[in-house]
Length: 302
Length: 245
Image (tube, chains in turn orange, green):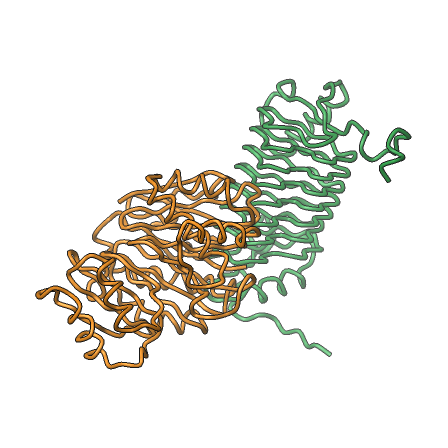
């Protein structure tokens, strides 16, 4: 059992409330996964900015001061890249006005032991071990603005309770994936992806799902096609939510043991494991509320 | 030893001239445990209204008296579970496991119900005006279920007794490994499960269907339905299969 809460805000006037709305949703899914948690927020001022790549690194302590990280990264980037480092809760964010691949290279050289948990122009990813509401508070979720948010509370089954094994898994620019369930053939798919040159950060089954989706998107699939293909290749129980810079997708496996409920209004699309996470959203009484059908891919774009 | 005290924050209205006293429980102020304790202490003829349910789990479970409970809004998991005698109405949607193991009485959901509605139910009537998710009536043992909309896949799986009426469409593998329950579907069936077959709709079936639809407050024409049930090939030993054991 794990908990998922995701929110895409269609009405920009709700953007300032993104964090407080997501936090109220997260609060209701803690029971489903109290061991660790993760958050992904999109277009949050102060964390990311247009024209700049941001990498989210696991842990606040990287063994160097933020100034030393900035200096180390800046030394490997072109002049004017405006490298910057900041610590938010238990997450280190490194940004610069260069492409993500180049920034990944510079950060990997500067901090060879760092685990990159998020990358892109629009997303910041934060995850840790502990009570989900403590993790949200430590990162200051309540006060964050943004266009989309994704949260996950984990009850670990397939791999250890570690921050690295927490969701979301963000393995390509602005792409995040969270999972309630388990993939049973993840070792096989992992081997296939490794043969294609894909590098893994963890032993987690969900990371295989995220890497698979990233691999399909790279080969030209749309998000919807990538998730349809995932259903053909990965076996197991799943409700997945995938977010990109401007879209959100939900899919359940054809057996549909894992719950999901969606509320849609003109102002937002919200998805959660249980209705009680949606109960506090504005205008919920007039929302279109439905459970996604088994094996069907749902996508919404901003 | 447990000492039970009357729950706080529960208001009892003055009885109306023509009806019983209605007790209102606001779940923004009271806990589900307080609600359920109050309902367990209730006696025949009482009425309860639950406000601000907010999708909370396990509301109105374990009723054993002939009482009336109205939940004004959406319910979470296992609403009205282990239900006996009373009458529960949910004005919104219900989550997983609605009226699980219902023994008697009536449970009515005006919206949709999630998966495993009326699972293992022994008796009583469950009415869902909207759609029901997967596994509706799984392992039903005597309960009657009337669904106004569609039902999901694997519904009436291993159904042993009772009647399932679907006014919309049924998902895949309807009635898989069914024993003796009777299924009536007005719309299409995506696929039938193992050993579930269409059967003729005879006068006795039309009569019971008419009764069930009326009990659910529906006006659908019984003649528009098709009946499905067990081919009885799976659970009777067949000598040709003796080498398979």
